[in-house]
Amino acid sequence: MEKAWWKESVVYQIYPRSFCDSNGDGIGDLNGITGRLEYLKELGIDVIWLSPVYQSPNDDNGYDISDYKAIMAEFGTMEDYDRMLSKAHSLGIKIMMDLVVNHTSDEHAWFVESRKSKDNPYRDYYIWRDGKDGKEPNNWGSCFGGSAWKYDEGTGQYFLHLFSPKQPDLNWDNQKVRKEVFDMMNWWCRKGIDGFRMDVISLISKRPGLPAGAVGKSGYGNPGCANGPHVHEYLQEMNREVLSKYDLITVGECSGVTVEEAKKYASSEGTELNMVFQFEHVDLDGGESFKWNHNKIRLTELKAVMSKWQTELAGKAWNSLYWCNHDQPRMLSRIGNDSPKYRERSAKLLGTCLHMMQGTPYIYQGEELGMTNYPFTSLDEFRDIESINAYHELTEKGIIAPEDMFDYISYKGRDNARTPMQWDNGPQAGFTSGTPWISVNPNYTEINAKEQMEREDSVFHYYQKLIKLRKENEIIVYGDYKLFLPDSEELYVYMRSYKGQKLLVICNFTEKEIVYKIPEELKGRRGRVLISNYGRNALEQSITLSAYECAAVLY
Image (tube, rainbow, N blue to C red; front, side):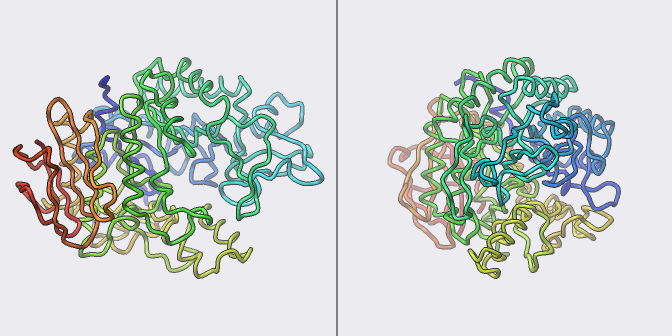
């Protein structure tokens, strides 16, 4: 397998609004990030994925961009950005920018021009259509609820927005649009950035004729825009015009991606992207109501999905590994156990299970501390457009009862991941000296970076060790993967193999004690425990695993 620095790296996602506030306005900013870079250096990460910091009206927390070459005033200035980039590089940390080019803000100069008249030069930068029978052009629904079309009285046509009405979709079939995007990307690359995480990049190519979609419970049709007819052609063009000219890390957020599609997006031939984010494992607890439920992910199903991506991409494309990000609730509260008794063991188990697999691991801010979901008590505590819109739409239509819907958005809502980073046990968890834009989780007095950095057996130091092990053992990066016990709802056991070495990873996802016998093929071989959340030094042929115990053993 061809080696590459981005395969051997560990990425840390920063959600700037919630990471660290340097000026007391309650909103995290670039100078706050700069001031915490030594913390990330100590953790051992290689790359920061920075969620959007561009100029934005903030309808969707920065994923609605009005100027790609300017910094959001709340976050600071371009000088602040340059200083952060320079300091990160001096510490050996790379910066990966969030590229949001399926859509812009409706306040972007291109769209301001586009809506002026049907013959404006920028009209075809976006997707405009006439209505049909006095209604929308088709039945497509938006990801944030309601129709995916908004009527514009100025020209009597509708524009497409797969997300918020303030996020009109760009028309990627227009070569001028693609050139504008590539020019902007080159501008950032010349500045010295190290890569791009590409937001909903699998949606950029719409189906010809924009046909109606299958109607779901919401009453709207599924746009079915994922993996459209020209998406690979456009990404190969992007690769030729931008990506191939620099030594970058690239990852595409690809909703609706299959293993077969991922082999095209992230082909080892390097014609498109380095890797993709797939969502199969975090969609396992979905259902008819999208994600709004209290379903639990079954371990057998999780193992099947994770193992499929491990084995079927092997040698053909590269995996990205993640549990958490800004769009998911805290995984510790979702498939782990966030009770005080088991929280740290469970957090270490989740880290071990993921970081010992093949692929580039992504850590979401606070995951290395074992941060948990927020205990919401009222709707006005929410800030996320998706959760708020879903609550109103599904309760007002009588689809879900208000008390149930509140329970669901509290459990699955994106704001769980967006509460401020917990730095210490002082006021507002050390995040700000002002009033935070979203409430701090009240458990910050027990869960915070200062306490964990001072304690040797903390989740922080465990993650630090996981990262160090990946740098010291090629088998963790490049080894093959084999699953054991696929039918067990309690144990996740797999083995990695590389150049005669074997790495056995054992994870007990329950509170029960479970007896486990190591595989026949390892009997008689002497194993060395690389990491264990119970401090286990050796592994016998038959062992009794305690609640949420995990170990990785090298043979």
